[in-house]
Length: 224
Image 1: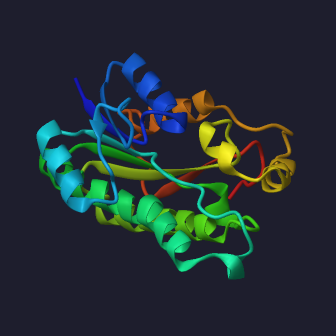
Image 2 (image 1 turned 90 degrees about the vertical axis):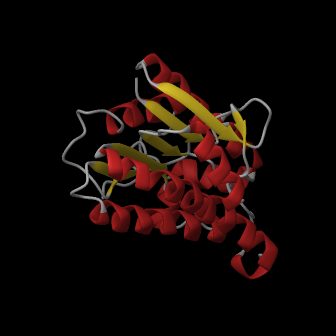
């Protein structure tokens, strides 16, 4: 049985992915900052991440789903600590967990890494500069790591969702949420289960000739 770590796995997209992968017969271990997770782990703490990963042992699949929206305000009003916190979770946390599991995947010659980026990382969303910039960083890291690992059997891809119905969006201002929803040609927000279905394929043996890619799941907002 393959084993997966899902960060942010206690709620939202992470929880939906955990449900789907378990249904696929995969052993799922969730990392989150709540007691509902299998491991209460702060991914911004590199030492804690390393200790948790060592305790878990072999990891075949990594879903980087933990993330925060960050400040909802004009760029020039963003405080340095707000900017830093957004990058600490969305980028540095992803770095910490990925760095902890990649060597083992490479050694075994098989692995699947899927990171949650965002349409904001492609298009940029107004009043979400920290979030948009951090998700652009996730996209850049995915493309780079995908190329680095292309001949190892470890496949690295990202997903760029538009607005998805999750608790994370409860902290987004109504004005921002209305704007980014209005950009979706289908006229609705996405469902977490729809994203999880794409993750299911990206973590399977059937996904064998795609790496360093960014998969749009946006109701038609972007097709590039």
